[in-house]
Length: 160
Image 1 (cartoon, rainbow, N blue to C red):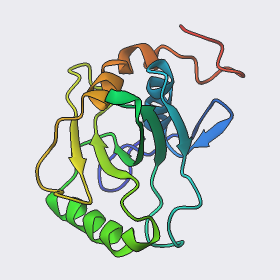
Image 2: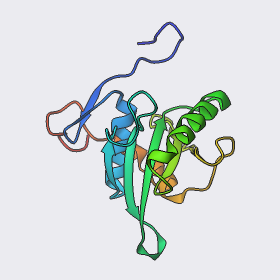
Image 3: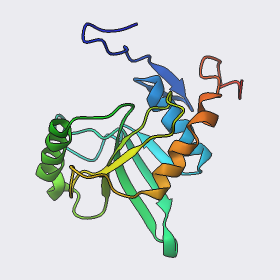
Image 4: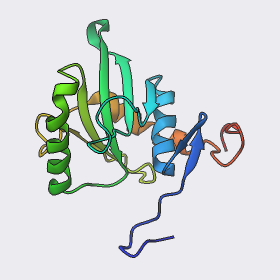
């Protein structure tokens, strides 16, 4: 079903005991699981309410076995420069609360697009140019497998 702006309405979806506001976020979480990344959906304790609530907090071991931490906004479509700039301002206004301990990323990739196209932006640094982020390109490559998960069945029901 489409809203008045012509966009699809988000379909609330449950996965791994978490209620996501959109099925695309649940598919992204499933892809994170397939890549064995630790994640938390809409982590509550990072910023003051109303400033910015990231979609995901993600941890993984980077090269050299250091733990990398990321606050991530996921969008299932391409965003505008104005959106990225507003997100950049919100995050930079809030950086004092977190220091330099996290990456702040925006991932644009449709779990329903078979092309595997994805863009990743480092929002705190430069929201205007995509960056290379192999870990998230790898996650996006798992979308086709993640879509096979039966989100409509209690306890997931496994693959189709």
